[in-house]
Each structure stands twice: as C-alpha cells, then as structure tokens.
Length: 193
Ligand SMILES: [Zn+2]
Image 1: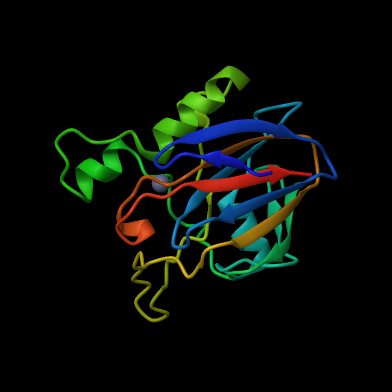
Image 2 (image 1 turned 180 degrees about the vertical axis):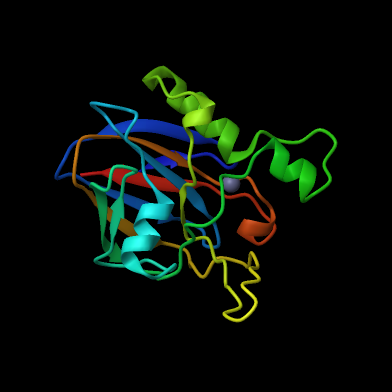
C-alpha cells in the first residue's frame, strides 16, 4: 500500500541505491515537489541547472537522469504516465504566496514543509534548491521565454517511477499552491520498493 501525503504537507524519508520511488497522483491535477540529497554527504543535492544542461531540454521523462550539483546521477526516471514535469521553479513558499498571490498571512508552502521534514536529516532552509516538480505543467513560449503555470496533465492514478542511483534522503510534498494544482489541494501517494 502506498503512503499518503496529506494536502499542503510534506515528508522526508530515505531510499537505498537500486530501490525505486513511485510518486502517484491519486485524484489527478496535483503536483509533488521532489528533493534528493546524498545520504552520506548532504552537501550533494539534486540540481536543476546540471540536469537541464546535460539533457539540453526542459521537459524530462522516461530514461532521463536527474543529476546532482556534483554531476553525479542521483535518480533516473524509469516510468512516466504523464510526460510533463517542471524543473525550473522553486518550491512554493511564504514569499510565493506574498508576492504572487498577495496573501497577508501566507502558508509556508512546499518550501516550509520540506524545511521542516528535512531538518532532522541536517538540511537547513538555505540548502533547499529548485525541486523536481512532479506533474507540474509549465509551458514556455519558445520566442519570448514567457512561462505559465497551467493545470497538471496528470489524471487520477498516474505515476512517475524513479530509480535511486545512490543512497538518498528524499523530500516530497503535496504542493500547496492553488495555481499549480488547478485550484484545489489534494493528497499525493508514494511508495519505495
Ligand atoms: Zn508547492
């Protein structure tokens, strides 16, 4: 049975090299922010910049490796029901909700949820990079570079499966931003095998 992450919350857990992590969108149109740290040295962390550089593409799917800041492969996507994820935008945060939504009492967002869940592993907020935003749909205008946050293309039960290429600490959320999730907050399911 998969574990459930409640709406607008997050978890951290460890995964061994060779195991797979399955991220499931149980209801559809829900984003999950994914972080990975090397379990033996948390200075090594998932890197959007390295990964997109080596892929020469911003949309990643089955077969694509996710690299660390030290250019080691941390995870490889081995199954993908959706084919659209984002690796450009930072985890939503108090500041996201203050600046983009104009909230006066903003939710702590994925950033706050990840910071709390990862703190017992020694990760401090300033160590949190751009997350791999599973199921997040951010189309880009190829001429102007303008980006939009649109509803995820994921339908109920869609999955993304990643293989761990080293021993990892994983941070994972059910995203807290209205825009990213087509206006409603839903759970995320995950399992390690
Ligand atoms: Zn979020």
